[in-house]
Amino acid sequence: MRFIFLCLAFLLTRSALAAPDDARKIVGVWKLVSVLYEDQQTNETWPVLGAHPRGSQVATAKGRWVAVVTGEGRKVPQNDAERADALRSMIAYSGKYRVEDGKVTTRVEAAWQESWVGGDQVRFIRFEGENLLRIDSPPMPHPNLAGRVVRVIVTWEREE
Image (cartoon, rainbow, N blue to C red; front, side, top):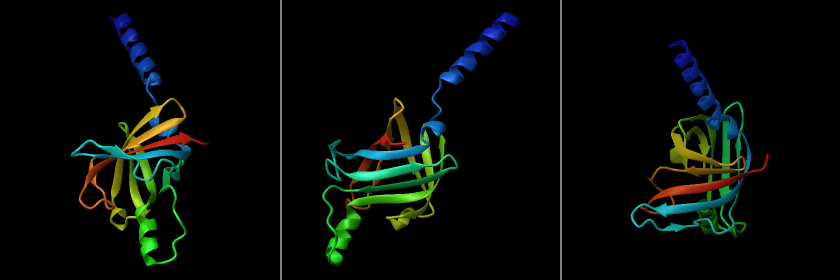
């Protein structure tokens, strides 16, 4: 009986060590690779911010999160209409985050979309090796897409 207990303890310890430590792995500076939107009615996907968007995400070991994404080909706004276009071609938010059960949850303190402030942004995370991070949103109405429900699929590459 003792032998069985020791074997089980060994197997449990081994599987715990082999399980990915998402909270540790997410810490760092990440460079944006792509942002895709997936329409939940049609399953159509498209690079909503262009083929070459720009952005950075920073996750600190003490639980701070900052993400800024801008679309490809943005111009310096010269008037109110262009400023509105610039706002529609970006995503940005920051706050305190936690990682658990394959998800990162950020309590938003500041955002480009004011309705996010004070709420939680929950995203599903998946690591591909040590250097790629995929973050998916649950299906949601997107504030820039008049009534369309999308899933946002963002891929990041580790910089530091």
